[in-house]
Length: 220
Image 1 (cartoon, rainbow, N blue to C red):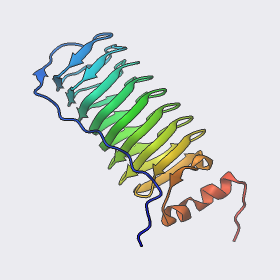
Image 2 (image 1 turned 90 degrees about the horizontal axis):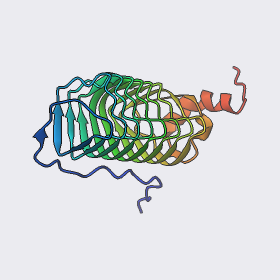
Image 3 (image 1 turned 45 degrees about the vertical axis):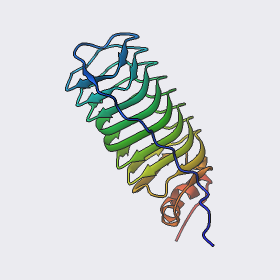
Image 4 (image 1 turned 180 degrees about the vertical axis):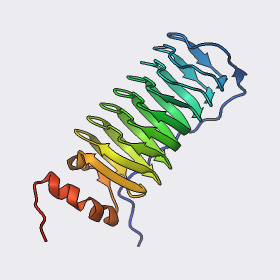
């Protein structure tokens, strides 16, 4: 008799973008963007706290130092976006896909992510401190030094991705699946993996980190 899986998988976003109107122009504080496509634009340095994106496509846009604190992204796809220092602190992302992003220093601390897929690309120094992640999938993406400190992760999957020097200090986990993570490197917070599932091979790889966390000295 087959064993039932003990880790509940993430629910992925399900949405179909409607026919979109092309949008040209800048981002504005509390701006309302509904059913539009933003393609190939440079939004570097623009400040749009509280902006709302619903049924939108953001494609091949530059987001360097864009201020989107408290923004809301719903039923939205971001594809090929790039930028350093994008500020999405305390933002809300629901039913969102981020595809092939090349970003660094993204601020998502205090944000709420629900039914979000991040697929492909590379994100350096992702700041998710004290964020809430539910039904989130990281797939085929390189995450260099991501910070999950104090965050809550529920039904989060890491699939075929590289997790380099991750910080899970103070994190809380439930149904977090790390078994298919291609590279699993935890710099801090290995003691917070209660609620996560790893493979036997990953357990062996992490043995020195577990030993150091509980003060065990290993000598030949």
